[in-house]
Amino acid sequence: MSGLNRDEVVRLASLATGDEKHEVSSYSTLDVLMVLYGRVLRFDSDRPDWEERDRFILSKGHGPSAFYAVLAARGFFPEEWLSTFMAREGRLGGHPDRRLIPGVEASTGSLGHGLGLSVGIGLALRAKGLEKQRVFCLTGDAELNEGSNWEAILVAPQLRLSNLTLVVIDNHSSSIPMGPWEDKFMSFGWHARAVDSRDHEQLYGALSYRDAEWPAVVIADVQPVGG
Image (cartoon, rainbow, N blue to C red; front, top):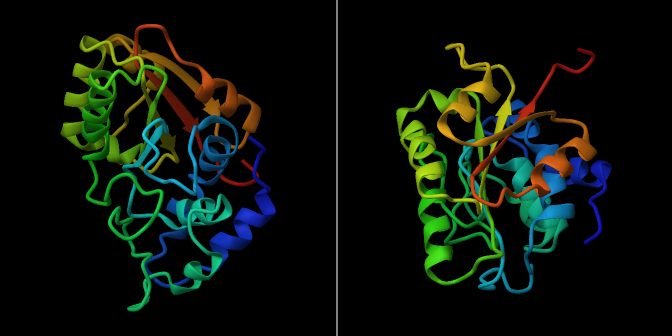
């Protein structure tokens, strides 16, 4: 699958405007989303419910404008929808809605729920015999202050959910020190790797990796521009 052009995705993301855009939060996910939808995920935008697709859960659902831009770039819905972001007549709300938006797997935005959902989806895929399919869940660093995430982090290795990959966007917004990330996750039994959030080759290497037995986590470190 061909990659995505960053300038084009940024242009599409700029079409969504308004006070509820959460621009900084959303744009911190942009490069990860571009690599996932450009080079890693298995999907068919003409058949969003294709059974053999990989699943992506945006647990960090309060900043979806970059996600919407990538979905539009991949043909899940028309570009024109982006200009109706948060509008009464539009489908693109401040939180993604799976009932309204093709390509959205779960309605999210209330932080702390996406990873638990992803564990359940991983188990469901296994029960259906879909062994090649993967589940990716994207959270923010501050979102991991939510205790429900750590219940999922605890149980996923016990269930040997090797089809699950967690992506943590670490934009250093947490008021509670959470690191060192790799050591913490490995102590729970996860395969962990930290990468530069803007380096697409590092992201591709980490996101395309699948352990034979254990769930994986990719910590995408977001440094300020010029930092």
